[in-house]
Length: 162
Image (cartoon, rainbow, N blue to C red; front, side):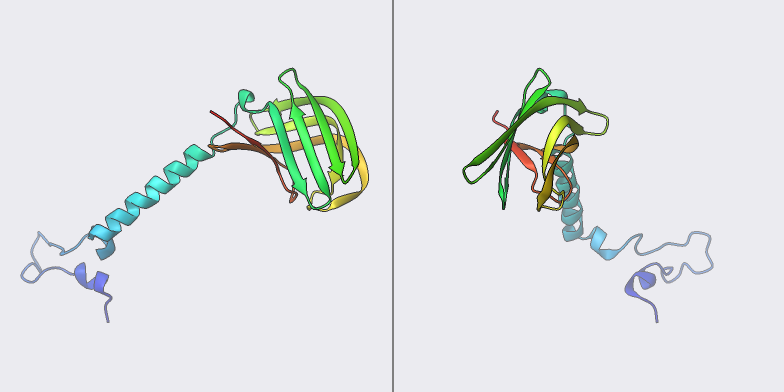
């Protein structure tokens, strides 16, 4: 038994054996219907908006004040235009401050913080031992915010005001 699409691709009556074989349909029925065209257009529009919303970050997008709320405290990063940063971790009434230099790597879309304190284990849990390291944070830009992400931990966010 043939499927409806296979039946529509069979030669029309009277054309069998002729040199000009005609077909009743050249594609699936959903594509030629108004609903299929609208779905296709909506899908293309969705992906265009998605590409625009997640544009490649530029060096001018990076400086600013970022924050990340974690179950065990709040962490703030202030990335300055001169390449320096300030990192403040607050848990209850205790605050720990750190400073260092940061660099943006546009080809891989990440920021490297030299001498950063790692309060998170990368899986969203408090590190059992705070370490000093060069920290690579992936940069993502959207229409209203810039985020700096590391592993499975809650990312740092900075709102964009235009």
